[in-house]
Image (cartoon, rainbow, N blue to C red; front, side, top):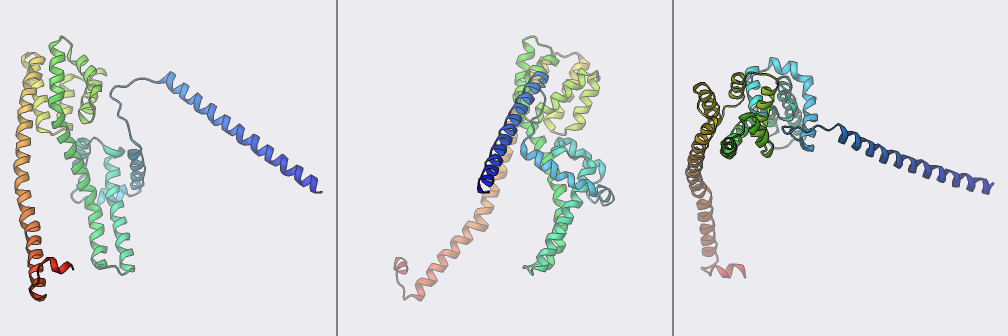
Length: 310
C-alpha cells in the first residue's frame, strides 16, 4: 500500500513538472512569435507619441468617471462644455480625456471628497464638520484647476521650444528643402507639444486638408502668444509671397528676444517673493528665537547663553 502511494506521488510530481515545462515553452514561443509579428508589421510613425505606464494607469482610472458624465453635464458650474473642450485641446487631451469624461471626472472626485469627509466625521477627526463640506467642493474644483494648469503649462512649453525649432527650420529651408519635407525631417527630433502640433499639421496636409485651414486649426488649438505670431506670419508670408526661410529666420530672432524678456520678467517677479518670505517668515522666526534666548537667560540669573546647554 505504501509503495502505491509513493508511486502515485512520484507520478504526480513528474506530471506537474512536465506541465510546468510545457507551459514555459508555450509562453516563450508565444512571446517570440509576437515579437516577430510586430517586427514584420511595424510601420514607423515619426509623430507617434509614446505613452508611459503612469499615463496608461491614470487613463484606466479616469474611465470610472464615465458613469457620472450625464450628471456632470447638468452640474457644469465653471465648466461649460465649450470651455472644457478648449482646455482639453490646449492641454493635448491628456490621459485620453474627452469632454464627457471630464464632466464625469469632476463629479467622481466630488463624491470621493464627500465620502472622505464622511469618514473623517465618523472618526471624529479635527475639523471634520468642515471637511465634509469643503472636501467635495475641493474635489469638484481640483479637476477644473488641474486641466487649466495642464493647458497653461503645455502652452508655455510650446513658447519655450519654438526658438530652437525655428532656428532648425530656418537652416533647413535655406539649404533648399521644401517646407513640408523640412517639417517631416525635423519634427521627429523634438519632444513635447511642438512635435505633436506640427506632426498633426503635416498629417492634415498629407490627407488633403488645405494649408490655410490647417493653419487656422493650429491657431484654434493653441493660444500661445509666440505660436500665434508664428502662424499668422506664415499665413501673411504665404499671401504676400515672402520666402518662408526668411519668415522663419525673422521669427526665430523675435522669439529669442521675447524669451529673454520673459526670463527677465520672471527674475524681476522672483525678487519681491524672496523679500516677502524673508520679511514674514525668516525675520519673525529669528526675532522669536533671539527673544526666547534672552528671556531664558534672564530667568537663569543672567548666565551666558552657552551655560544653558550644560
